[in-house]
Amino acid sequence: MAVSPSARLIPPALPPAVVVHGPGSGVDVLISRFATALAGRGFRVGGVVQRQGGGTQAGGAVCADEMELVEIATGRAIPISQRLGRGSSSCRVDPAGVAEASALIRAARAGGLDLLVLNKFGGLESQGGGLASELGDAVAEGVPVLTSVNGKYLPDWLAFAGTLSRMLPPEEDALWRWWGGCRLYRDLLNGVEDDEVRRIECAPPWVLVRSARGCGVARMPEGAAVPAYRLRALGRHGLGALARRIEAWDPFDATLGFAAVNAHYNRPDLDAEAGNGLDAVVGSAGPAPGRLVVVGAFPDLLDRLPRAEVIDASPGEGRFPPEAADWLLPGAAQVVLTGSTLPNRTLPRLLDLAGPARVAMVGPSTTLSDRLFSYGIETLAGFVADDPDGLADAVAAGARPRQWTRFGRQVVRRRAGASGLSPRGAGSG
Image 1 (tube, rainbow, N blue to C red):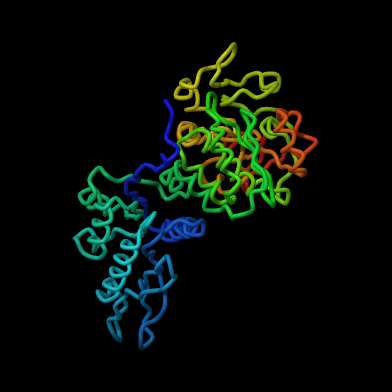
Image 2 (image 1 turned 30 degrees about the vertical axis):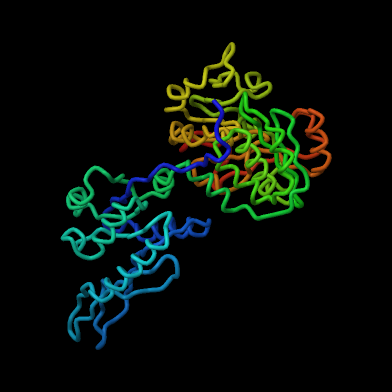
């Protein structure tokens, strides 16, 4: 059944998340870093994070618990420690500071948010005070909420949030898994700068977009229709407008959108090392121990990786059908995904199934953006066009990827700290 070109991606609702921690976990810094990263990527993030002070009161008495709330959007600091006077060595929450923070949070919610951060559900909130009202109102409105709770207040949190919330360990990877792979599409789109579109080519299964600064390709899903009447009208659009089509459900529009996204990220000036995709997986020491699952049939795959369990949309001898992903991906040590999992929308689910496996994305459709590293991908192996016009001519003439190499190069990017695809905790492979 055809999909309306106007149908758009809407990421699933996020349950409220609470980071459960003990003393000295550094949870304030963890949540602040995560919120700042999302805001820097163009998401609308509001709320406050707590920062411990360490200053002194009048008279020289040290206030070990001196605190302030920092507004994420502006960096504005709001003192919330009540000075108790000479001779006192304790601090208590200042109601005026909490009221000021509450007003800022209400204003941020009114402006629309992708995420609201209230960094602590503590003693006051457990009794219905502090910022409990703002937290409860945001959850009721369906605004994604992130907070934290010390283990001693966990029963109070459960009484407050019931079974609605997702409890997370104080780990950055856990925060990104909660944020979810469905939001990586908006993340990639937020990073695209507008540019002149000079050429569009469509020779199924490949779509190419040539911009003033780069060239991107993407592979259409099997059976996707190419609407010739819409192709004729595309030349009027800039790169940003074409890229926004990655949020369309129509298979052709989504593929076109990713070709435009790749024209931005996969530019010739990209900082990347030369390398073939399968070489990046095999490594100098050969495949690492553990089960290897590959989604997508690559040329000469089984010759290079004879023990791989291969999942493909067109299963044949030695290949599993797509529904086998639910059985094969959990527990795998290594996972290789074709870049076409981006435009065909299967990537978020495959990343969920892969869990802690070492994941690589390989193929000409791969978007070579370090934004993808946050979502659990460690290695990106794709294609950069050094002669974009030559590549466009080749695609238009029906050339396949093996014939593209004289117009560009295969490159590899790795997440910081990743060296090949050996299992976590093992040596590189």
